[in-house]
Amino acid sequence: MARRRQSSHSPFGVPTLPRVEGTADISSPMVSDDPQPLPPPPVVEESIEPHLDLVPPTPKYENLVASRYEILDQIGTGGMGAVYKVRHVELGKIFALKIIHSEMSENPRVREMFYSEARVASSLEHRNIVSITDFGEDVRRGAFIVMEYLKGESLADRLDRQRRVDMKTSCDIIQQTADALSYMHASGIIHGDIKPENIFLAKANRDDDRRRNLVKVLDFGLSRMALPYGTVSGDQLAGTPAYLAPERICGAAPDEKSDLYSLGVLFYEVLTGDVPFDGNVAQILHAHLDTPPTPPSFKVDDPHVDERIDDIILTCLAKEPAARYKNVKAFSEAMSRFMVDLGVFRRRAVTPVPSPAPRPRDEACRSMVETNPLPMFALNADGKLTMANKSFALFVKEQAVRLVGRRLMQTRLGRFCPGLSKDLEHVLANNKITSRELVFRQPDGSMSTLLVWLAPLVVGGIIVGAHGVVHWVTK
Image (cartoon, rainbow, N blue to C red; front, side, top):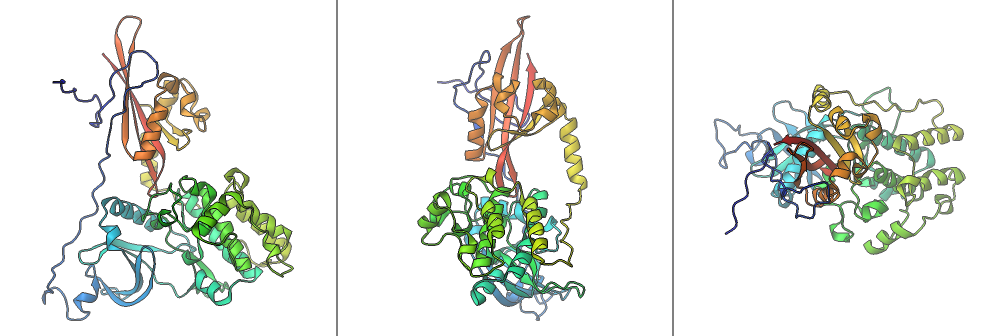
């Protein structure tokens, strides 16, 4: 009978791989543990039968969500669930409340992602992003999220009614949407599902705001809870096929460049009344990958839609992410120059994009990582370093500023531990922590063990890379 393997050196309880002498590649199978999911916030149990002492006769108990929101009317439905107009029973204020489909909220992974996305959403404050005021779980109805109540219509409803929008209004709507995306991206958030249904045209609340269409971006991040990315099957693809960037069809995670591509599709549709590629799902996906889009000026009889706007939109719709604008902010600057040349909004200043305010917790985490005596690093999905603390820079004998952007396998650690490339693939594919152990014999005959852990790096509910820790153990 095989002898039971001794416990790991890891302080986190992660099993390690068998020891390997020297610096050669490791061919032993990788051992990993499922990461322990964070428990969801506690659910407040409600009695099925109303208590006269606790629940007033008005509003009726069956119309309440989480004992504090009275349902007044259903105002919409979608892939995530139904949306209701509600009133807070104590404040008397009107909100919009979205109840997530029960089959989604009962999935532990989806529940964890829901709470993660809701926390992120509630932290964003921008005039072009819908405000999230509350979220939680109702014992009878399931997970819910509460938003500001908006008066107006979605961009999808506007296009259904009048098919296309004039140049001046189109530029205004797209510029406001770009402002919202720039703020999200600066906060480390990717929307992942830009489309007309997620752009709401609200009535401005301020008397000094002369805009007829105040854009509110909806459903960022939460739209990704339903399904994982990385599949080309039309009925299992996270996102809407007509607005999906080519790299996402090939399995890449959403990022700033894929949001920019979707924004270009949206701009194309608002100006022309049609998306660049139409047909069944398979035809749309293949067209995104292989077919050049027809320039917008070829599809409408409007002297303002000329080669300049063609160039802006087609740059967003480039098949290769590197051929697009550097980011949404660069796109917004190009749009501003075009609108000034055209005489659109000459008297109105461009909406500034506020920078997210630094939070004390963020500063504390940054300081903790930077001053940690253990070498720590972070990678993107391509294996390039996105962060390295001072201890890691000392370990690989390089300057920290020169490490960012380099591939991990090109550093001293990568040369010592070539099997880390396989570990990274395993982390990204399986959302699991991995550990690797290397044993080195010193000139004096003593033995030193190198332990390397990799864990998924999750931003906005999406695995965008991995983060790792290196630890020397001298025997």
